[in-house]
Length: 459
Ligand code: PMP
Image 1 (cartoon, rainbow, N blue to C red):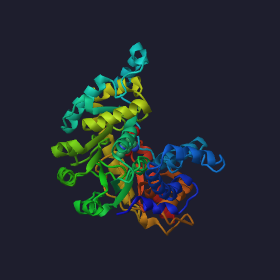
Image 2 (image 1 turned 180 degrees about the horizontal axis):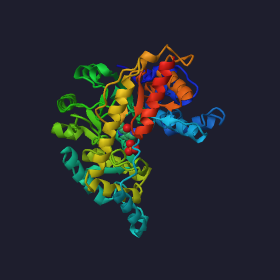
Image 3 (image 1 turned 90 degrees about the vertical axis):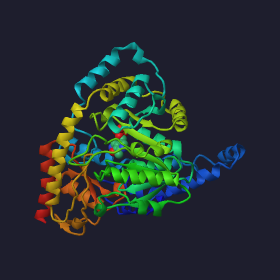
Image 4 (image 1 turned 90 degrees about the horizontal axis):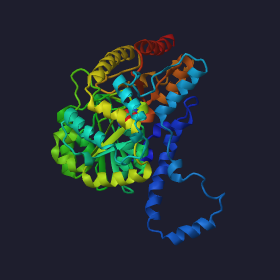
């Protein structure tokens, strides 16, 4: 178990090509830690004091960017993707395993709904901050259909993507110093969102031995009187793990017993493979509903990453505060995107089924190819669209005459030598691993892994 201060210590070893964004994640977590303390102190200081301090400090003495924002690291996954795209634009034949987005176009009926919305003058105006009433109703019906959880439209907030729902959820729950338990490997955005909200991420490490799933014993050991929230994600990004229903239930019951909130990120609910199935925690543990926020969105299920529609569901008091927050921060999400999301969630799941089948096939292929590389061990993905192999067997070895000592250095080496991009585990708080997205075409997928296998075989 680790506290925020050392949440990405693996990131301290530098690399060049993938560069500064990953290194910053490491060095600035401590800045963020101090920031929490400073915020807490500042709340006890009167305005007069602040104003006079502001006059005393010359502009050259003061930070141009606030410490709060300067502490945020660039999204490493987006940065890797951008790097691969930049190399591609420069004429390199790069294969990118970085992006966490389906390669399929958004289904036609969804696009058509957006086109109709564009032509409707009603949609050219502000609409309620919490979301279009018909979309909130459709999300209620969809949630009952897909996860068996009963809620009401007033408990739904439509957000600018699932990411915005994640930020809102932590902002809604965290006071300065509140601890949030975060199992690692974790999606790279969570610790940033927690720290920005004033919270302190408390990291629990998991690995392939336990299928990247936390145990109640680990949760118990991480829990302190300051623990406010447990972050729970299944299917998981980046590990591809899916918790079986009995473990989901046990963790939910543990949270109820402890009086801890759960933020459950259900964005990959429809992407599960083989015998693995998504199970919603507040459905299995109804007593949790009063201390649970559900985060979800259309991005992954309907190939709608660019449309930016997500949502958060929770108890009325927290939702009311969150809606007030959104009314000042963003007002309503784009009406056109909401109309598209309405067509998506109100429609059937046939398009999703086709995409799920393709992902399952690609996940199996990728797992087989990665596992055949000496020095790489990989559990078969159970959900989402990522393989998360342990690459520590490749570290310290000579590859094309160079040696990588960390997953970050390996990512850099493979990008420069083989023109293949993946996201090193440091970005997810677990050095020694690497995330490969299989949301790309079959031919590219096979070619990309073959290039890595060749690099290793040549060395
Ligand atoms: N949660 C998880 C676990 C994710 O992987 C992502 C996207 N990578 C999101 C939330 C946010 O998705 P979006 O903002 O595109 O809806």
